[in-house]
Amino acid sequence: MTAHGLHGYAKILPLTDFPERFEQIKTVYLFRGDEQIKEAEIEKVRFTGSGQLLVKFSFLNTPEEVKQYTNCLLKIPEEDKLVLPEDFFYIDDLKGMNVYLISGELLGKVKDVYFAGNNVLEILTNKNKEVMVPFVKDFVPEVDLFNKKIIIKPIPGLLEDDETD
Image 1 (cartoon, helix red, strand yellow):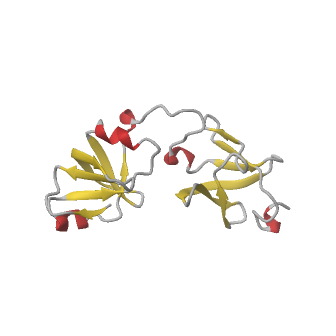
Image 2 (tube, one colour):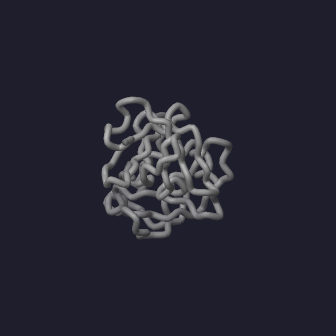
């Protein structure tokens, strides 16, 4: 989230495949790291040509006020979350899930999810190493939300040699 213009608009890069839902949402939560710092009422939403959103929050009226919330993450209240189509997931639902190799061996847990051309799982292994795995069907054939379990199919070189011993 960064300041845009003179009237307190915030420029936001949506981390959703369904940004149009911001037109219906009235309230979001602002987070800095894992800490919720503010409940924010949305007054207006405009879409930019670059895929970003311009959001006017009721409590922000100047660029200086918006700058206080630079790099905050917006989260939608649980009751406003959409039921997602098959093979779509909320990042918060993926964090903390156990990750298994296709062989059945527990590799570790999902630490975070990033976007870098496609989504990437950051996995903290049982050997306390961080590995990045592209979150695509070729590498992640199964996600079981009910059992909080992800199956990955690594190709040679994706994981360090000692991770698959």
